Image (cartoon, rainbow, N blue to C red; front, side, top):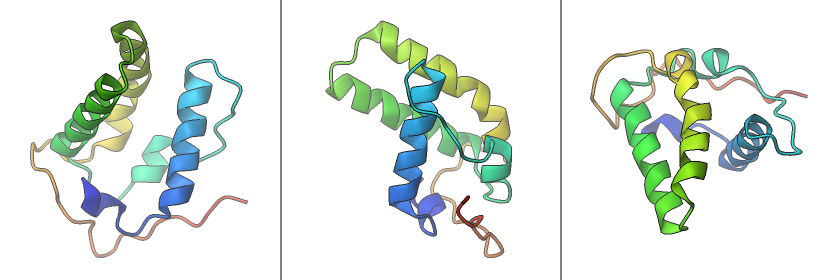
Length: 108
C-alpha cells in the first residue's frame, strides 16, 4: 500500500491516525481531520489495499502482544470506514495514486 502514501505528509498522517483511533476508542484525543470519504476521494484505494492495511495492523498488534479483545475493538472501529475509503472492489495491491490526485491542504 506504500504507493498510496507517496505524496502524504507521513508525520501528519501518523498524528491524525493516533487522534482518530484514540477518539474512536474513548481516549482523550479528539480527531480534527476530514472524514474518510473526503480524505480518500480520488486515491483509487482498492479492497485489496484496505485488506492489506488491516493485515499489517493485526500483525503489528500481535507483535506487541495486544490482547484479542482489544484488537477486535480497534478493528470494529475501522471496519465501518471501509466503504468510505475503498473506491475499487479489486484485490489488487500496490496500485499507484492516480496522476491527478493531490492531497488536500492541511486543515488550520
